[in-house]
Amino acid sequence: MQPPAWEFRMHRSQFHRLVAALAGRCRWPRPGLGMALIGARILVAFAIPPLVFAHEAHPANPPAALSAEERAFLEENESAMAKMMNDMAAKPTGDVDRDFVAMMNPHHQGAIDMAVIELRYGKNEQLRRIAQEIIVDQMQEIAAMKLAIGEPATDTTPAPTQPPSGPVASVHHHPGMQMDMSAGMKK
Image (cartoon, rainbow, N blue to C red):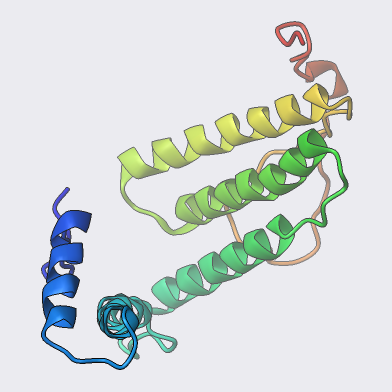
C-alpha cells in the first residue's frame, strides 16, 4: 500500500545527513545545540501535518446532507467505539493473563457491536456475511479466553439486528445447546 501524497518518508541515514548538513552551516555557542534545534524543528514539521490531517479525516460534525439512516449508523458506531475504548482501559491486576483478557474482551465485544450495526444498516451482502462471521468468531474467542483463565463462558444470546423499539417480549435461551470449548484447550 502506498502512503498518502502528503506523507513523506525518509531513511534514517538520509535524515541524519540532512540534519548534519543544516546544522553544519549554523554557528552555535555550544556544540550539538544547532543539531538539536534543527532536529526539533524537523520533528515538529513532520509531526504536525499528520495530526492536522487526521483531525480533518473525522470531522466532529458530519455533513448535514446525511440521511437519517446514515446518521443513525454513525451515531451507533461512534457509541460502540467509545464504549469499547472506555472498557479496554482496564485497571491492571498484577496477573498478565487476566489483564490481557480484561482488555481483549471489550475489544472483541466492540467488533461484535460494530458487526451488529453493519447488519442493521448495511446493504452489501458480502459485508453482511463477513459481519455475521465476525459475530460468531468474536463470541467464540471471548468464550475461549474466559475459559483459558478459569472463568465460565457466559451464556450468549443472539445479537439483535434491529434497534430496540420497545420492551423485549421474551428471550429464548437454549441451555442444552452450549458449546464446550474446553476440550480443545490444554495448557
